[in-house]
Each structure stands twice: as C-alpha cells, then as structure tokens.
Length: 127
Image 1 (cartoon, rainbow, N blue to C red):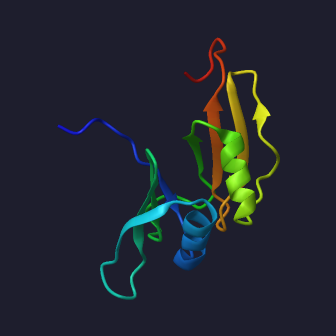
Image 2: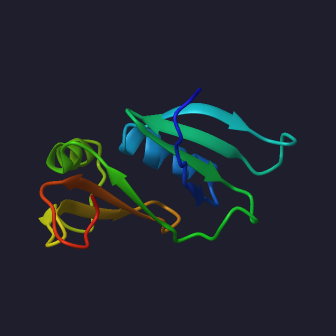
C-alpha cells in the first residue's frame, strides 16, 4: 500500500511558460501531461526528489495566485541552483522565528512558492 501524500495543484494559464519555469528554472521533471482533446487545457504532474506538484490549466482547478510550501534539505543550495538557472527569488533565504529558513518566489502566473528548510523548532510553528 502506498503512503499517504497530498499533492497541491497550482493553476496555470500558459503551460509553456510554466514548463520553462518549473523544469528549466527549478529543476523539476515532467512526469506526465494529459489533455481531454488536443486543444484542451493541460494537466501536468511535475516532481523533484520527494516533491510533487500538479499544474492545471483548467479554470475549475483553483485560482491563480496560490501558495505552496516546499520543504527541502537546503534552501541555500536551492537558491544557488535557481540563480544559476536565471530564477531570482523575492529575497535571500531568511531564518524565521517559527524554525524555518525560507525564501519566496513567484511563478509566471503569480503563484507563490515558499522554499523552506526546518532549522529548529518554535512553539506553535511547523514541525
């Protein structure tokens, strides 16, 4: 039996721009793409390491401008890799009082990604 997992869906409006950002810019790979018809909106699964996201062009699959937290082992390594690929975050990684080191960035549609690493624990914060 497979372990339980949640896979966030981010709404996209331009699948080619989204692919460039997530695959070329952030190093995700496309696992699969699906369309009802050749001209229908796309539904894509991407992954990198243990992270998995759905990208959907379907209007009913949420709104553009969502927020997803991606927990990784080393936020600074992600930032260095992103910079080498031409992706700039909204600011450098910052240690937060709730025990995370975080940086935020936006995809071409305005969806927010908070790349996080747990660096400690704080009462009431994520664990």
